[in-house]
Length: 330
Image (cartoon, rainbow, N blue to C red):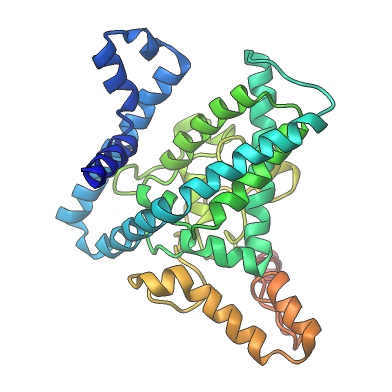
């Protein structure tokens, strides 16, 4: 019975129905008019979109089913192993770092804007280093392994990436004075939007969202982020606000004449769970094992993916800079 209850809770949480069930049981529907109630409505819409997206793939593009198979298996593994660890990291970070903030915000609309900008800074930092530090790329690479874009991709991470990301984002928000209640509201909104921007071309062919493409990061921008094309590599690290990508020079619009090639540059089997989930760790282990000297072994762990002790580096920055240089010469 406990197992059935646990499965029931997981299904309800995944579908975002907890708030609706509570309102139905208590007869208090005022909660649905609150910020949390509005967020619940948005959270319900995303699983519906995921099921519609899956049905379209099932009936029209069955070759893409391998992505769902691997990603759903990753979701199950991460829910079992990583959820409590991630929550614990957030709670500890709030309790430890909040007291060091030079000031404290309040739960108001203007502090919400400030808090979201700070949140995006934390997200940018964790995400940037997830691409620039080899061991952290091992945690992040399952998210980029899919050869097509769909909503399930948002949950495809190595389980230890969640506590790493939550530590960076939460500590930065607390140190810069974001109120914990404000922080949780921003977290819920960002989780919702972060899922939406992974929507696939078969559901939203043009992911630019019209004029919004000029002011925020849209599904089009995030598709660029998942591209392995030289121009698109290591760009668009934020989720909603593009302020930090523009400040740090990592903003990149989608080129209509350059089709996005999804996946990672390492040769891999995208339909194999073990290769997707552990493949980068195996590749790193092999590089460290054959490296000459302890210094090079450490450098392989902490330098960007593509770094090589011979000096023949193929990091994303070098590949992209070379592409841009050649494009300017044409």
